Image (tube, rainbow, N blue to C red):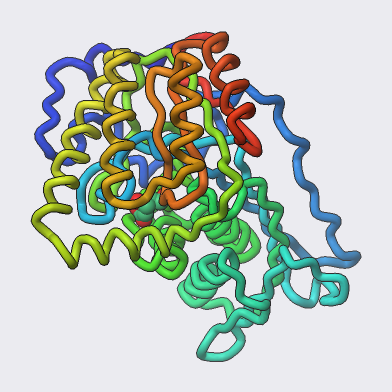
Length: 375
Ligand code: MEV
């Protein structure tokens, strides 16, 4: 069913006031319910289970998911809005144990040790691009909750790294939830956001907070200036996400945009103004079910991202293939310079055709997300 709230749709003014396209309360105050309003069309992957060490006194568990940004990436780092969509299929599951509960031998690269016994917490694992943000978030959590201990985190991550799908935020959010569970804490979602966001500042260089908000949201969000609200969805369509296979660090892309902005703030500021206008209009398209108009905005936003130097030949090829196959619109999603493209298809049949075209054009993998409506 389409989540369509008449009362909320009436009288909306997209003038930049915070919750203009939202209903209900701030998404940051919503607990992730696990209930998915926008199921992914692919079959669910098997649930991860950690074999707990024998005699383990306790283990904490947490999960979170990746996301795609429909519109608004990069400009949102400078305070403009963004629309982000959770992708439940892209799941991260984390199990946290006390160090005494498990042996260090045989630890995989997805295992992270955090030592918080001294004043200064430190990650004992080899810091990777992924683990550093997660370690920062977990260290901050342990310090906040006053637990001087060594924890071991087993991370089962189904969000491809460096593809603009929110892997760093999802891993940090799942880890914070697992550690909270281990410590018997029930943190407010706003606290979880703050902790994840600390990690994101490390992972992205400068992070708007959109990934951290979306990692724990159970529905699409309207994001602005660090806050998120559930977005009213009156659109029935399918998003097809395609991976170029090219890894790109979000921090590199954010840094490149920063360099352009510093070089020519007036010109880049104009691009951000246009980005904000497109994102506001797109939120109205999502609410009112205007697929073709939304598609046109995706195409224009892709042009803006290209002007910012964030597109690549691989991204261009996938966007062109999607449009040739009948997609209403297509653009890169997330940081760019590689990563993923998203395409908007009218329905499942159109999405299957777009998906085939994307694979033929070189996509190394694809996902589909149903937006509203029946599949
Ligand atoms: C990354 O998913 C989105 C960016 O806008 C960075 C950020 O908002 O932190 C590129």
